[in-house]
Length: 320
Image (cartoon, rainbow, N blue to C red):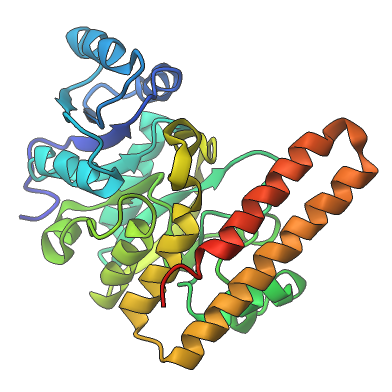
């Protein structure tokens, strides 16, 4: 089924919630400038007041379809449930702690439909002044990982050869960019692409599925682009903080697992990847320790960040 033969001209906005009662109102409010968005919310067995709030929003007609899972099945599986409920519509994936207007989602759809070479189109996602990188870049293979953590990507932002795991907001957010992955927090994908390449991989509970999906789209011969014509805001880590516990290291673990399963590196390449990643994480941890020593007022915050980066650095050694 092509994107133009789905139900009406609606776009299905798929949102997965987990303890998202504090975020969902603001998220939906930004979408309210367009009447015919088909908003699908899949809740992963929230333990707070989210379910009650979601039922109220559904009753008011602010949510088109509400699916309540009886357990937390993970991000990708919940997204795929939402995609199935989209019933052939074009899909926009949106985190509940991200905000974008309905008009901007329509603009992304327009970009994709004007150029059939585009498989995924994403807005420039901002996460506050302290986040220097974009939620987009190159696949996490050895060279992009090395250029990112070594500083080569930051030192030579205009040289494509040195582009790394992430693009930099200051250098790459003002012009349309072809990239190898974008974050699943805010991305548009036409129905025809989903039909051809399939939905998200459910290998991982959380993290890894968006870069794997983008890689499949790229292998189908389509482009992944980020456009400055549209911007979204995202509170990084909100859903992870609410989930708590072990999930804090899933990003690192699953990125490494994705690299191993997708690119089949030999033992030397796996060792090199982990050494580069660990060195990069520990260097950032050390930076925050030094900042904490200089700034007593923010010492606790800096030490918490240092601890988080240290945990990331160790997490990739859990498998062979």
